[in-house]
Length: 257
Image (tube, rainbow, N blue to C red; front, side, top):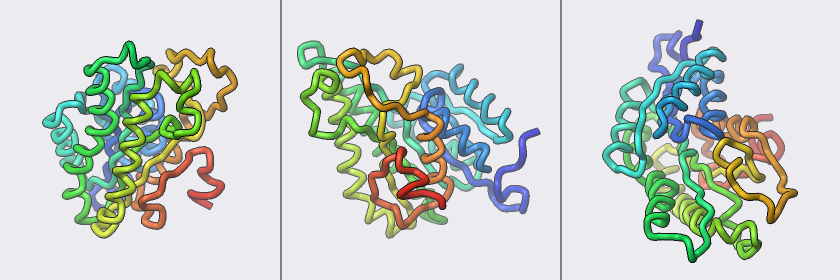
């Protein structure tokens, strides 16, 4: 039997966290960690069947969840997802894990690739924040945006990183934007963080990446990244607002303990 969300058993509105890209990988791991930690999770993904499997895993571990199928490249669908989550209780957090990361050389990249990568990885984060902040600022909340080590200028010209130029640029834009708006949101009671896994994360999506150019990449499990996300999203961590955090340091230089 699924236990009631934290606060619901005491007659308070249950706290809701919206997780994008929750159908697999890091998004799924974050949803599971949030559910077992007492939050009701609204899972959104373009793949409804994958999201259903995440919901099954969340409920099997004692949490609660529901699903909204959405294409976050469409502004109206993004707003509808936030509205759905807010209608479930007190929207306490938004986690943006949905992303695309095609391997494209400049010769192969198209404007369609550019629009899709920037649209989902960066523009959707902006739209989610614009929809969620007016709701969350009443009682505070958290925005957790998944970024990447691909933003680093060092090594950007290596054989492995070159095909991820568009992906890295989208995440660099996300980091820069978050750093600039975090103080404004902190004044409104909302903690904004970007989180990098700090290493390669093996997921159904990343298994398709050609790693032959750099076979010795350090690897971090999706579960570890998901737990770091969940800790940030459960409650506003104002002392860390505006920080770009590394999941491999969770529990060591930041986090509980």
